[in-house]
Image 1: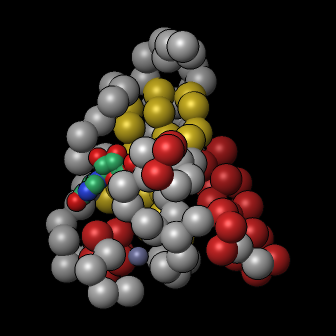
Image 2: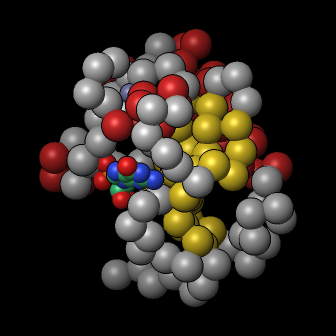
Length: 111
Ligand code: 5GP
Ligand code: ZN
């Protein structure tokens, strides 16, 4: 997708601090962290929202969750973490390429 920041990060056209990559997903540090650890897990395939998922994409997102779970220790998330997927304007979604926020490294407030 042209003009998609996360597609450009996936393609290496915009630099990022990658912490994990395989042929179908990428995990990198958020540029404006809101927690001590703030990572983004993105599928390499562009689609904007959960609403755009079919069974195949849902399986991919399932593998993203399994990968996050397998990396808990490596990423310093042993004490717990929060996963967030912002959907649409009222949730504050600013990048329209599906992404899972991974927040941790500290005690997280729930307001
Ligand atoms: P959203 O609000 O769409 O759920 O989250 C988008 C996230 O992407 C934000 O937390 C923002 O800080 C992050 N972000 C936006 N542009 C870039 C960028 O160029 N590089 C990185 N690493 N993160 C970005
Ligand atoms: Zn994209």
